[in-house]
Image 1 (tube, protein in one colour):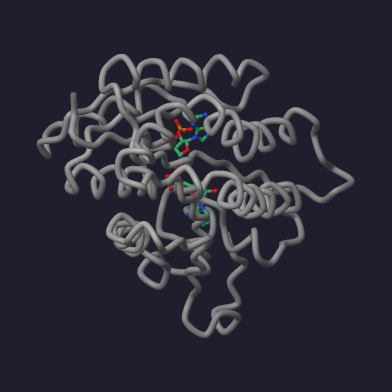
Image 2 (tube, rainbow, N blue to C red):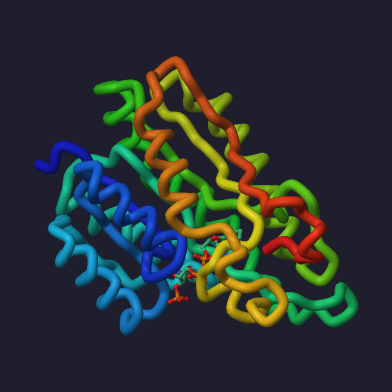
Length: 249
Ligand SMILES: NC(=O)c1ccc[n+]([C@@H]2O[C@H](COP(=O)([O-])OP(=O)(O)OC[C@H]3O[C@@H](n4cnc5c(N)ncnc54)[C@H](OP(=O)(O)O)[C@@H]3O)[C@@H](O)[C@H]2O)c1
């Protein structure tokens, strides 16, 4: 059995891939999951080439059958690695629309991907997380929320609502599970240079955005905290936020 193991969702690019590299470098065997297999497999290979043990599980959390997809990921992880020290609930999607123009299907994709699957991952992974928590009191769940979970945005109304919910669910999980040695942290970044922000790179240059390495390094620090220290959320802001005129992602 691996000495440490982690699940990272949305690991095929951006923040999730950076988190997976960081966790691999800290000795974790990895299960990576995301929607498109043709994008996930090269990312998984990149991680294997870096020397990490990797299980890749394509899974779509945006549909009505997301429960089965979450169960599939956790089962594949349990079968291969047998333990879970870190769960990164990172997959997410933002689809902008004014409230009068909301398309139900797009609303459901965001609610399912950004919120529902996170709740299901906690439930399905709880036994494994509790076993790790009982062993070392430092089982960790990292939930990628957003600055939009701290200050809501027009047009990104549903996205903002889901990210506020992630911050709230993270707080509830700390109250519920800290006693089991399971700590949760919500990451709340403004614009990060990933494919998700390609749409805005004409106004905010990529090099002026937060980098995925910034997120990964803060997450690395979370791994090294003593069991007595819980960090409920971390806000990553742009310098002089507002000066750039940037709409937070
Ligand atoms: N970039 C930012 O400025 C920013 C700021 C704050 C928070 N965030 C959050 O950071 C997280 C990661 O985003 P990112 O910026 O790294 O963007 P990204 O590179 O586009 O990554 C998004 C990841 O989520 C996966 N994903 C999306 N929909 C999915 C679905 N229905 N089922 C399974 N996987 C799905 C994607 O897989 P596919 O590509 O195959 O769909 C991809 O692996 C998201 O939760 C996002 O809301 C991003």
